[in-house]
Image (tube, rainbow, N blue to C red; front, top):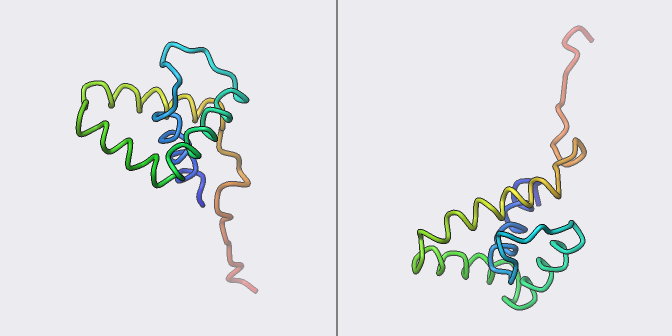
Length: 94
């Protein structure tokens, strides 16, 4: 799973978690909220389905909550160079 896909899955799980956008959460707290949400919704696909349902029912609330979830995930789980594909260079002179 690529870094952006992992961030999206984490954000979806955080979105459907019991956390409030006003909570000041630590990484261990967010990790536990994500785990609990994934279990409660029977996996990441279940979380994604719940996100879609909430967007359909309450789009005015869902959009800011997803922005918060994405911002939180990107802040607490920064992408590392090891997560990015390596660049292949070819020595044409060889």
